[in-house]
Image: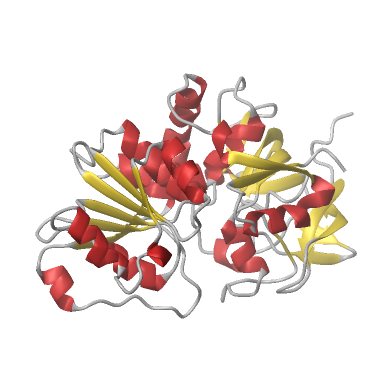
Length: 363
């Protein structure tokens, strides 16, 4: 029976208030409007950005809300004027097509497509993949190769793509034949390590205070691992400058810690070192360093989704995954049923979790 043009009733994980755990609720999902797409979400990853908003630390967080932004699904129906996807397409929602109402938790017409118990729910990052059905703007979705497993390529909706782009889209010649240090060995840090390896970095040093991350870092391509907690009174930037004879060509902060961001910059070589900030810091935190660090030639840059243009570049990344050229399977350390989504958040905080993928069809 066709559901086109009909309100769909399904399950969603709703965060009713800041700091509360998610609650599985029955919600109503309205049909897509003009230039909108309704998607049946099959799988979703859990990202630290979801936790950032859930926890109440996000100053722009609005509640009640359906979180989630690393999803994979199948187009159920499309609204008037949609030409880039069609019903049946395998798709990845994209949070990067930023528009005026996205940060307000609303669709382009300033309304919501979600209702629960008669109350409207806010959207999240234009995607809301913690619902079995979601509605997104047509600029916020990309069709991908249908042979690719959605329980894996859903992760290209955020972390892995961000890491790939942070390295691969550096100006030529990029990291080839250069030294690299990666601060933080979670999913994004490991992705940076792997991409630096595949792009010809001559030396890759992983930095993390969790000793269990050493084996992960080396599995993805790091030759060395440094635990700052084991350096005594020596600062990590001073140690790295010492062992690299002047500093790194490239450093990447994947922690969201402003003190680590400073250390990553100051570990760069004078004259040409480039430090990229990928991690998201808590609201109100500010970065600082002495101006001398910059006027002596270091560059401090920010990275959003790796600079990747999702609608044109993600299909290529999916094809590279299918060809065995980039890793995705290796990031998935935990899997959860939809009803266990809160346990998935607990998994994320454990030191042995890289990414947890939730099966939205099992409840």
